Image (cartoon, rainbow, N blue to C red; front, side):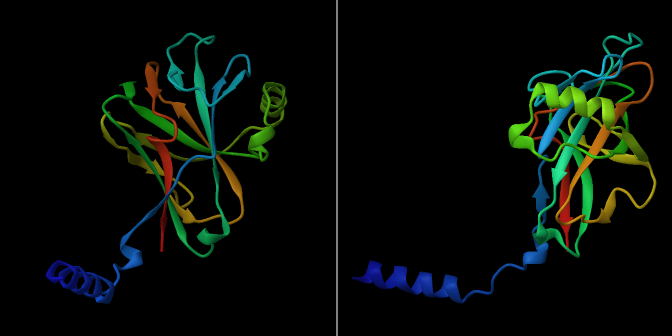
Length: 191
């Protein structure tokens, strides 16, 4: 009986305690899609797990960039979103470790029915848009913005929209890989 009374008292105190400030907890928005893009051929691979995602080595046939899409729901309306990039020790970042960051116009919007043929057609039509900055991506660690333009990495959250961000290696020798959906690019939703 004493144990029951103790448990009830503890529960009452827990429920009566003030709730943690919701503003103190950031919401992380993970990519809706990740696409490895071969610059020379236009080939695109959707969700390329366990592959180098960005390669710049002076051999045109090998060089790739990565396009990442983010789907902002209505809960992000009137908030600020910050593009972040993190690598863990198991990820890869070699060479200059620098990546130029671009917006990508008209990213795919029907991810569930997205086929390889759709990707090929999409690559021919869509394109890199605005250069919004350059990051240095150490492994392990959080990327730092070496330069930024147009307000990036913090932007008004584009609620109700799907946006694309493209990462391009800087210099003659860059290789980057992250664990898609775990590390790499994400948006932090701020109040």
